[in-house]
Amino acid sequence: MFMSAVIITDALWGDSGKGKISAYLARAENASYVVRCGTGTNAGHSLYFGKNLVKLNQLPLGGLANPKSQIRIGSGVVVDPEIFLREIKEYHLQKRTKIDFRCAIIEPRHKQAESNDSNLSKKIGSTKTGTGFARAEFIMRRARQAKDVKELKGFTSDAAKEINDACLKKKTVILEGSQGTFLSLALSPDYPFTTSDNCTTLALADDAGLNWKYIKDVVMIVKAVPSRVGEGPMPFELSSEEIEKRDIREYGVTTGRPRRKAARIDWNLLKYATMLNGPTQIALTFCDHFDLEVKGVREVKGLTAKVKNLIKKVEKVTQTPVTLVETGKDFEDIIALKR
Image (cartoon, rainbow, N blue to C red; front, side):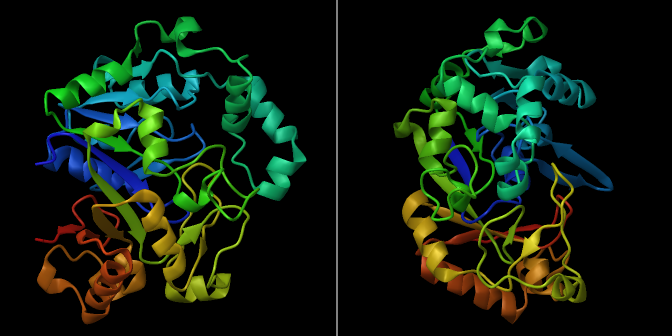
């Protein structure tokens, strides 16, 4: 049992299934709290529960998986009240969801500003959710906060205090990150093709106001066939024709844009991500895109030699055990490896 804080972060450019791993752990570890960290509504998380596809932009996906988990949004995340209220209503989460009262607010004018900004919308490939402009206004100390919004009355709390108190009592708290290490504003070599904050382990802890002493585990997600949405470099990028041929198409949750795909993991980047994030465990996801023969496999004996060799390579580069292997889009398509 984790019985303290576990942070879920992404090794590369996001879209790796962090929400799904969060949901799996929220159930497996009976998490008391699941906390959304990251920048704002610009990153979507999706998950298939049977035939039902759940898509969220504001809330942590892990919170839906366990009805006993309290759902929180950390103070470092900017909040779009319209999206927040729609999501909690759609999934009947009103009674167990709170926003930290200090969260900055995304307003319609922030979305319009991003749409009108040619640098963001054309060069960078912004999602135009208003996240970046809202964060910039927060830094300038001009933004409204959740405590100032009438529509959010009754949905705010001191989330930082709640989660630290829970950790003190040795309860499990899951911090669900968004985006990926190499989209980090101040750490990616790809600037300006980044998001509006860092996306690493300690940045996510900071988003939630988590005391570092309560961090017990860091689960770093490694996507077996890396992808990237928007502009910016991506080593070993496949052509759209090759993506079609391999039948590994993906589309962004927020924008619906096709995800660019790489032929393989860049091992130097993975080593660097390991240095920045300090993982204690690795979740290897999208293995069915790496080897179609493992699609839907739910037992270790069903893993192919090709996937087993990939696991060994990832463990060698990161010096970290692979503990979870994802083999398909369904919630149950996850294998826990005994270590």
